[in-house]
Image (cartoon, rainbow, N blue to C red):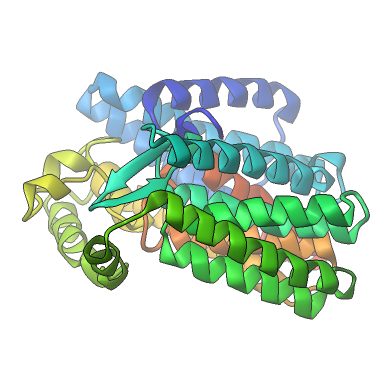
Length: 365
């Protein structure tokens, strides 16, 4: 998670190495529910596309694609009541705190790649090297921290300090979706978990102070801030989505090869060139073809269904997992966060963690 967010090639190879160890732990158990079926279809299609194109640059993303279903199979075999799943909130909270700390440090020092000046605004990126990805991790970690506090694992002073750090960092990414999700998580836990209501109120106060400090450190010009806030998070994706659709029509079966989206996208503004589609399904369609797209769509829907269904829960750990599964799945519809394998793994294991016994039999998620 922390090394380039698993986004760059060396980190993807390391992620695959972890999966190789996971395969030994898995012991050959492989249950094809909706989630596993989607991830497996995508991995098979991306492998076929990589082999067809004989492109060495595709090796790392193919290995990461294979690693995902392997690691999720370990979680499914362990079951939602296992220690692996019960420790998930603690792991996520610690990862979030680490990423948040590095993000704020990068912002204070204005030191790339922990922070980056984008369109005149300095934004925290942390080890993930992408502001919305850092914001997404902070949102998941905030929910995990509140769950741990409700269970008595984290005391109130620590919860307030950690909550302020995570919420303040989410603001420091200048990602408006992360702002909305942070407020939603705080409201959700205040409304559903009585034990954390007072803490949530105090976290809100500390978070506002941290957010103001983060904005002061970034010190964007008024014009740059206005330009950023008026930038449409969905409407601005129109050109890249259109280009992805056209490319898919040209090569619908085998795609252009894993990691090759950049080869088909010619941005109207040369400074705005990107290598990803800002949509999980379209990106998989371009790089791996129709089967990869169908697999990613199925996995995304399985995660979203499990997460949304469990948002009504009053059980803290389950609610925390529901936040992660829902937020990461929704992010995959409009951003490039689906291309960060550890983020996708976090969402998928969260979907496993928040399933019910009946749902596991019916949906496999």
